[in-house]
Amino acid sequence: MSKNFRVTLNERLKDENFKSEYDALEPEYQLINAILDCRKEMNMTQKQLSEATGIAQGDISKIENGCANSSLKTIERIAKGMGKKLKLEFV
Image (cartoon, rainbow, N blue to C red; front, top):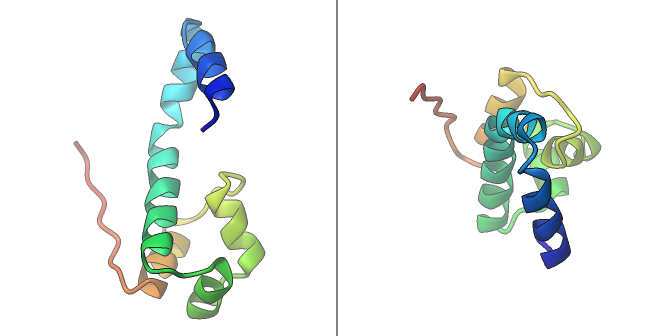
């Protein structure tokens, strides 16, 4: 994350409405980061994940970029394609 982005974000987070909307997206960001981290840890490309799951590479890209609202079934397919199980928690 660039320094300019972080500075701008910190400024914007001072606005209560912006912060509220930003915080509401936290679970989505956590899911995206979990997918990215796992895929990279496994040295797996989006194309390889696509082949393992049957999900189009373009759709995987959209999911990782936060441009798709994926179903639980799709997230389970991604986890399985990486040899993982999906675990959900309420905290």
